[in-house]
Image 1 (cartoon, helix red, strand yellow):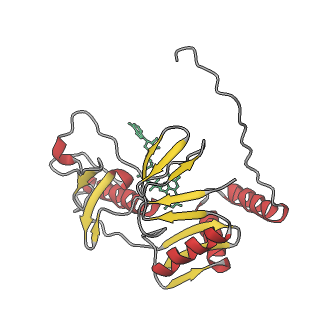
Image 2 (cartoon, rainbow, N blue to C red):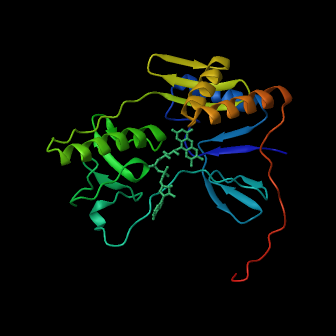
Image 3 (cartoon, helix red, strand yellow):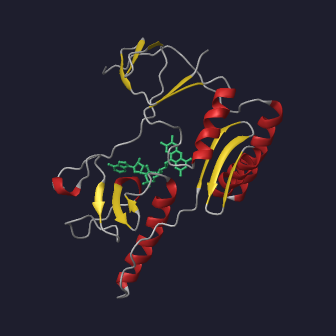
Length: 227
Ligand SMILES: Cc1cc2nc3c(=O)[nH]c(=O)nc-3n(C[C@H](O)[C@H](O)[C@H](O)COP(=O)(O)OP(=O)(O)OC[C@H]3O[C@@H](n4cnc5c(N)ncnc54)[C@H](O)[C@@H]3O)c2cc1C
């Protein structure tokens, strides 16, 4: 099996440091992945992928991971939306031009300090949700709302066994230590002690046995009655 990653930008993980994105590419190439950067996918007809540089790849399997766009709701004015359908908000997560309508996380587009829209990852969503719930509770007690400032806790990405990249505020590292950090951070975010222990032992088991606990069943597509 050949695996190709096609990335429109000139580097992988472009929100990470240069060292991290160079290392991520090297790790993938060492695993036998063909990384193609600076090229966009123009078309796929079920058999053939056409690339913007004229190349063609032949495949039955394509995994599309080219980002997300928001969803529009009926009734909200056009002026509330950005071009990728995020809802423009002020620094209190209040949708611009509306009263009592708030948006947060991936769906929200907020400009504050150096951020022109926060990265669509979990931390802005968590931090905005926490502040907004405090602000709304505070409003009931007559307290003024506090504006949002994103606290960047850093970024981690795992590439494979023993391989990850980590860009933290005071530490940039790649390789085994970054991979351990990735495991620790993700284990910490799993809810409940029982789940943490279960996942931990599952990982240890998979690491030594090379056995994936994930089982995918593939079968012929059956038609639904209403199709
Ligand atoms: C494959 C993948 C991997 C990711 N990996 C990472 C990662 O490693 N680290 C990281 O930080 N971020 C990661 N992200 C991004 C992260 O998941 C999002 O940034 C984060 O979940 C945003 O939180 P949110 O609350 O804004 O939206 P979501 O978590 O998407 O929650 C929105 C919820 O609204 C529901 N919903 C949608 N429409 C309606 C409707 N009309 N009515 C009612 N409910 C509705 C949805 O079902 C969903 O439950 C990943 C995302 C994907 C897709």
